[in-house]
Length: 299
Image (cartoon, rainbow, N blue to C red; front, side):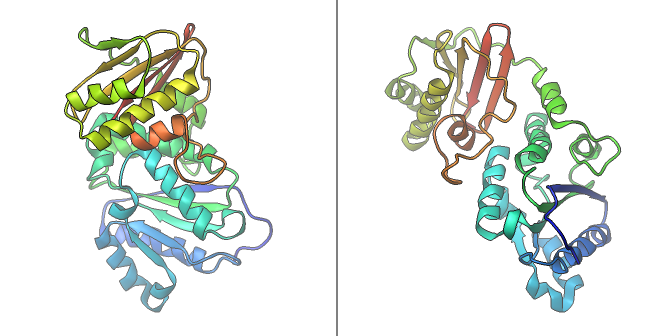
């Protein structure tokens, strides 16, 4: 039984290579949550098949565990997952964020479909240690080597404080950001001002449906407002759905959490980089001596 003052965010990792391995890792963790004083029922976010295994293993206790298919939780980008977690904790966690969560990413889907996507999820795992630090939430991230693969597991170990290779999140984020962005193509469209109507019209012309083009244009203008004063033209390139915009600022952002922190007035998307991260699949930030570059890719 858990007693005393709420502890800080407890971010753990379990690695397994079999069905029995998953149950062996998740079952005692959920039991810990069931026995925790002052906590709501624990939550398991996992593959449907693994949820069935857990229900069988839990027996009569299964009714006290909230089970959520991971395809219902991880529905978009890493930033979307942060928003989902923040909203869920606000609505369902106990005092101070007290809740036990089993979290199994969809490594066979979006999160594992490319090295580019995997990088974003590793960043999410690292920054979660900062974003949820004030919360008394206990999370167990489940990594199945049959789907995640050894490279993903090795990288993820560096983001979990209970491993021997844990890295400071800011150092790891800086390492990820040290990889230069590819140069814009020579045929990129250059605009002097980021007018929403112009960006939306361009995106429609590149094949984005009107509703998506409107969201993309809003992300561009919201980002421009954060970066003001801008330090150069807006560049646009790509074909739907991967429409890309790049903006420059004359000042550095110097904040690895930029756009990951929900607005203070609630979990709904708000202005600025938070909105851009919720709308776009990728938001890349790079600081240099001359200021900051922000690149948005819609999908």
